[in-house]
Image (cartoon, rainbow, N blue to C red; front, side, top):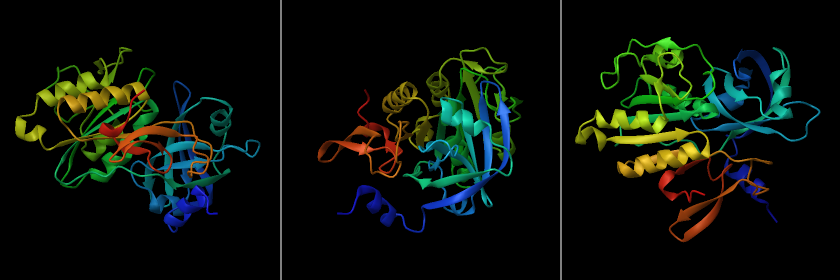
Length: 295
């Protein structure tokens, strides 16, 4: 009998790899957050915005940890993570030259539609990485991405005063993500923690302000993409429904195998045949927000 994991491997032959990734660099940020660059050429070549990797954090731990890919450039991938548990604590202790077993890229990525060129990217906390990857994918294309990023702990980058105008915001809401700024992708940051130059409120509050600045024609050409904690994604789904916007969300769930074999990461999804339990790892992590049965 062919297992679900074997079926997934067969379906993704040539795009799913196990390789020994070499740690190139690791940057530490406040709030026990880290950005790690890993040389993994096969994974980097096949990765898409929304893909993730399953990393063996240390030889002493048999269970891997799923991490979203933030960038895939040349032969390297970048991941952003916050220490939660022993596995990521051990991962944070790695040094350049160390080897990590990488399984990936895994999962259904974001699929922007050309008929909706206004791409609103919403990321919260460790849900920021897929939005960065998607912004890089869409820059210099017919799409016009706008990124709204939220965090209640210090952002995992140095805040930069944006030179990209946002006349729909107060003049003092100017903080942006440097990488997006360098790509010409407008971004604004939001938090309840009173960070300098950031909007005080939720990501959906800032998204509301952006939507109100658009005329009816521009709104009808808008699609929402989001990743972050479940309460945030539920609020984003409600925001999209309120404006009648298509919305894709990348869900977060605990994972064991990450290739569909254990069915430990299932979520309730509405399908044409009725509600069904779908696996976040291989049926997602990206789903149509309107189909998610929010708990």
